[in-house]
Structure formats: structure tokens, C-alpha cells
Length: 570
Ligand SMILES: Cc1cc2nc3c(=O)[nH]c(=O)nc-3n(C[C@H](O)[C@H](O)[C@H](O)COP(=O)(O)OP(=O)(O)OC[C@H]3O[C@@H](n4cnc5c(N)ncnc54)[C@H](O)[C@@H]3O)c2cc1C
Image (cartoon, rainbow, N blue to C red):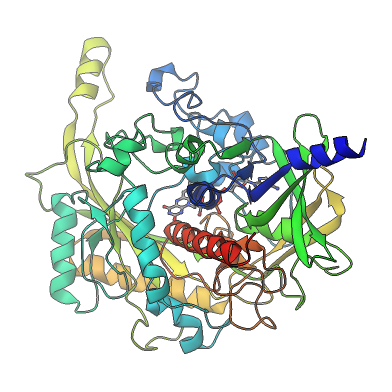
């Protein structure tokens, strides 16, 4: 009997466990198996195999029952997720429905999730900018949160490393606050976007309009072909899953790469409940999980554990990992776990018309658009609010279709629209300040379908965000007016936090165990065989999109963890 029990434990024992198979978990799996570690990836959602499990990827608009729209009934049942622009008939199977996984909104928060192999990597908008020392030095300079324990030089080689594999397109723009990377050829601007770029350059010394940097293969390199990925076809229906692997997803890239080593066991439908802490060893020895189909409780064991369940779920799992040594959550000696959560302020948009360049139009589609890097408070504090915002920008020529008429006339008019003027649009992407009062915690009075406490979310804007929103509207309005755009309209949607889908923090990095949870290697100060390399680990939020930084932190942390294991002969 004793031998049987030993064998059973052996069967459940790996070198490493990764929780979550999204952008960061996929990278952890690839790197750990790349170093020869037998790795178990536990994913709460269903299996999504590249190509095979993209049911709508080749559908034409008329092949959808509702022509791509969602019926009112679905929208009414899903008021939260329906706010996300990427949720439609072609993608609804990749989003968590509101009723399936409840959470407690102490303050309004739109929590957008994708529970499946690949996580939100299937759905993301693929914008990938490096952060810079203006970000990593931000908290120390401006006196908020805690100092980051790293600087740009620590992470720069890891950005290069992940960029080459993932495939990032862009220009080398030489903007100090947006370091250049290892770029594939950029997408092109259209003539009005280039016009605006020149207008801004001629009128503002501190502002640039550049082409967005995006995780699209514009010119496949041998490393991409080796992954079975091909050139992006500009279909612009990426969020349905790309059969070409033209954009980066875990499903097309890191997960199959890890699988090829023969060292990865991927277990979908496995909801991680908590980490197991062994007091005598002073380490985490494994995880408890629940089979999503049978509700069977399981335990798995490993020498190191990477928690990559996405920012808020990582907080939930760690807070739920209690023991007599850690009654408030694994590694949570200072009581700060779940606090200092921040996000991106995406509230405002400015749009306008343009009556120039009427002799030109656009042709084809482009899965990307121009970007205006942060220009406020970069070198010094110059406004009444802290930090700054970046902005997206795009211009499009309008078609004017005459929908009057019938039969051949109508068909002809729809197929041969006449051209109207140009429309231009911009949206803000503001940094928010992590604060103790913006937090997540467990609500033990409410449980989810797996018996786990629900997450209580209490996150809000503050006066800094209000001033920043106003400034974006004023500055973008001025930039548009200076370019000769007309009919300028600004809108503050006042959307709740969450819809930016860039929530970060709660398990922040820092030098001092008294004020942070993780050290500079993303390793829990108080339990050194547990690593957190998703958004939960972020000390502050920058204005740039975060996922490339999660990839780089993950690869860097695995490299460190494996070297430490070797030193300790593990
Ligand atoms: C529409 C949209 C547009 C976006 N655009 C951009 C963009 O342009 N640029 C950018 O940088 N980011 C963007 N994002 C955000 C980006 O998708 C996330 O930052 C990124 O996916 C986070 O990676 P992750 O590994 O932390 O989490 P995810 O990719 O969400 O993966 C987490 C995984 O963990 C699993 N999991 C959760 N809980 C458990 C549990 N208890 N047990 C087991 N598994 C669990 C989940 O099912 C999921 O598969 C966008 C997101 C969306 C939805």
C-alpha cells in the first residue's frame, strides 16, 4: 500500500508547475521546458488547439446566424462582457460569460476574462511597446508606490529575447521614453496619418506620431517558420484565432513549442485552488486543483511554481493559499497582498473630420494603427497631475453608400460606394497611480462554482485621473485643430476601470520585504520557490501596453530560477 501511495505522488510530481496558459504562462512553459524541466501547466479553461479549435476563423459574415452581431438576449445576460469591443458572434466562445464566474464589485469594475488554453492571448489587440526608465524610475521620482527593484538595463536583453521569438513589427523611432526593439518591418501609415505625423512634428518638439508596434509577423524569420507561423494576412479578424499564426498567441507559439520538447504536460479544465505550503521545508511543495468537469480535488507537486493566472486571479489564488505560517495568503507577511492594484485610464476619445487629401483613399486592411507616445511630465513634472498618457490614432476615408433603390441598383450602389471625407480618431491610454485603497480581497461569504471564495474588487479613479483625462482632451483637441481637422468632438465615456483589460499589481515587486511581495526576480520574498510574472507583479503601470513586459519578466525569472535550482542541486 505504502508503495502505491509513493507511486501516486510520483505520478503527480514535476520539476515545475505553471498556473495558467495565457501570455505569461505560455512563456513560462516554453522557457522551463527549454531548460529541460518536466513541466505541468494547469489551465482552468478548455483546450484550444491552434487552428483546430478556432471555429469561426474562416467564416464569412453571411455564415454567421446573426451576421456577427450578438442577439439582445446574449447582451442582456452579459452586461459586463458586452462592453468589450472584441466580444461578438465570432468570438463569444473565447470570453468568460458574466454569470459563469461571479465576483463582487465593491466599486464598479468590468473584469474581462478569457478562460481557455491561451487565455487572453487569443483576444488581445497585440500592441507591444517596451517600457523605459521613465517608467521604472517613475515611482521613485514622483513619490508613489515603491521603487521598482529593476531598471530598463535589467530587462532590455529580455525584451530583445522575447521580441525575436514572438515577432514584433515596428519602426526604430528613436523616442527615449519608448525604447526601440528587435523589429520586423512596420505597418504603413495612410496619407492622412502621415500628414498628421508631419503636422505634429512641425508644431511640437516633444511629441511624435509613430506607427504602432504590434505582435504581427510582417516578414517571417526562420524562428517563426520553425514555430509553424506565417506572414500576417491582414485579415483583421485576429481575435477569432489566426490559422496562419500571423499574430502572437500562446496557442500558435509558446504552447506548441513547449509541447515539442516532450516535457510539458498541459492539463486543461484544472482550476487551481491554492498552493500547498510545507512548514518544515519552508517551501511551497505543490498546488491543489479541482477538475472543472468532475469537481474532483487533486494535488500536484513540484520544486518551483510559476503563478500566471492573470493579475487578479493570481491575487485570488495566493490570497486563498493559507497555512498556519501564512494565515493571510502565501507570502503575505506584510498584509499588502491585493493592494496597490492599478490599471490604465482609457476613458476619453477625441474624433474629428478632415477635408484634405480628397484625391487619395486607402486600400486593404491593416491590423494596427499609429501611436502617440507619452509626452506629458516625461523629463520633469510640468502639469497639475502626476505621470502621463499615450494615445492611439487613426484616419479612415469614409464610404458613402446610397441605400435607396432596389435590386441591381442597390447592389451596384453598395458595391461602388462614393467617397466621403476623412474621419480621424484618437483614444487615451493613461497611467494610473497604484494606491493602497485600490485593492482586491477574498469575500469568504460568497463562493464560486468551485467552492473558492469570490474576489471582491474595490478599484476606482481619483482626482489625478480626472485631471489627466481633461488634459488629454485639451491637448488632443489642440493637436487636431493645429492639423486643420474640423468638427472636433471629445468624449469622456466615464467607463468603469477594467475595460482597459490592463489591471496590474497586488503582488508587487520591490526591494524591501516590508513593503513589497516579490523581489527583483519576481520571486516571493517569503517563499522563494514561487514566482509571479504576470500583471500582479507590476509595481506601477506605465502608459505602455503591458503584455510584452510580462513576457520579458517571465523569461528572465525562469532563467534565474533554473540557475538557482542548479546551484542548489535541485
Ligand atoms: C480585447 C483585448 C485587447 C487587449 N489588447 C492588448 C494589447 O494590445 N496589448 C497588451 O499588451 N495587452 C492587451 N490585452 C491584455 C492582454 O491580453 C493581457 O495583458 C495578457 O493576456 C495577460 O497575460 P496573462 O498570462 O497574465 O493572462 P491571460 O492571458 O489572461 O492568461 C491567464 C490564464 O490563466 C488561467 N487561469 C486563471 N485562473 C486560473 C486558476 N485558478 N487555475 C488555472 N488556470 C487559471 C486563465 O484561464 C487564463 O488562460 C488585451 C486584452 C483583451 C481581452
